[in-house]
Image (cartoon, rainbow, N blue to C red; front, top):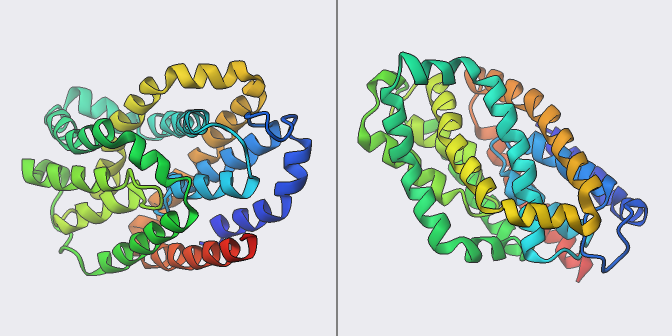
Length: 289
């Protein structure tokens, strides 16, 4: 539980030195090698823990004080999300094979559950992306995320399995995923909690959460493909590759850890962590301003 917080603490201490050694001078609008490594590490750890990887990345960019344009910053974030998508595919390869062969009905529920996030993402893409530029908004979202995770302890009776899913369940979990486009709201946390609201067993909610997330992340990657290419051509290919590789490797470990935690424990500790992180962001914001 302290691991994400420890990473941010290291980031605060290392940001000035890493920025100086990054290979991207101030105002260059790129991402350096060591910045890519640290941000990839943050993405790999936080994508699968219910603490909001987008919120952590926004805070990371803020602490590094990078000068990337919004478009290039989003492109980098999507690229490291693609790395953790690859980690998802590796981890859930058996479940994916089952969906394509013996559990094809889940394809319908995945497509149906993807509609809310796809609609919100296409209609309000710029507005949500701009939120990442405002640390206090991210902090507020982290508080909401923490409260929702804490409340999830009282959701559902955990008796239903994926074979018992209905269209209503799929849409409810999909709506939770749409809300999680907000930086600071965890996609995995909100969708797992929504699954618990539907009465799903924790292991089943965990599996469907990540099956549902794959089309969303893949779609975002395709939409940002041109900007990712532009980021690489801007001289940031070293930082981009470093971030991708680190996010993939660390992501594989992180998703395994989350699987163990979800089966054995509740989500309350993660909720308390995101609330504490929000207050830490507030303190740092006050100091920096």
